[in-house]
Image 1 (cartoon, rainbow, N blue to C red):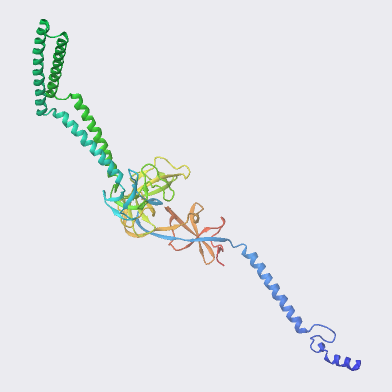
Image 2 (cartoon, helix red, strand yellow; image 1 turned 90 degrees about the horizontal axis):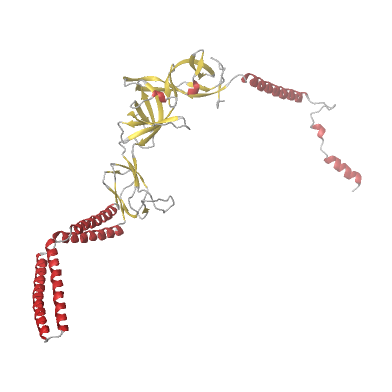
Length: 457
């Protein structure tokens, strides 16, 4: 195919872009495109100016934090101080073992109510029982010996001593005759000198035996010496003491409840070693106690009172106790204990309030609040006693106490009267409750000034 024909074919395949272009013959931008460009630039400029103006004017609106004022209904009059603390048992008892042994049986669970003297735990007692039996046998042996000494010789023994003495005297009389006869025969030359010596020795021996038997006969009639009886008494007392100790050790293998109360904690299990001397915190090591219990009808509230407020309280001062778990229940309380020393680190003084009418709702370690009363006057109707607001919400303004409320984007100032302190702030009058009080704001905040609440758009 000729080159010219190919060139013509390629030219016929080229796309003609001039037909679809919006340009005029001179290459200028169409009018409609210029309008779109101007409109876009205008929108960007307006948005930029709006943002700039918003930032300029919004910079004068302070950002604040608010909290809700809570109305307090109370039938309590003359509250001088409100403080929070924890309920504690007046006397918490950790029940330990007097002896070292392994737990054979434990019969209580956490929360069980027990009576004084009730068996809580039994320890293995085989070795203690054997020691007691041994000591008891020694007591019986010593007591028998003492009884023998105290009763002296039996009549049969005295009679036997008498018979032995009579026999010895008869033998002595015979030996005396034999000696006399032997002397005569020796003098006549019938017996030798040796026969006289033998008769003399036998006679003297009989004399000594008679003397010895006479002493024994007298002793059998008189009985043992008083010193021997006293010594036997001492031996018996010593043996009895050992037996009593062994019995006490045996009895200590049965652990009983010392008072009426409720089991707060069970710290030992069957098979664990309980020690009276040392304990280990390691798993499987010897335990120092088996259970802890307390009388839940004898409860107190433990409080740490700031030293600045301590002057408002005194011993036997009354108050009303409430707990967070049951806020509608109220209990009478009275200050039973004031610590003789302050806590220097916390700048507080510990005070314990005795709860006079506890019930089954109260538990140790519960959060509790005590409202201390200045007197015993109580109103008969339940009226709002004020509104509790955070301490930071109350300000000084021209010698008055005021708070700022957040309402419709503005700060509204209200005069208030501070009545007393509460654990959650201050009890004031002048509000109805439910208002949004400003807690954090600039110091120069003014009445009616626009505000923005933090966290809200």
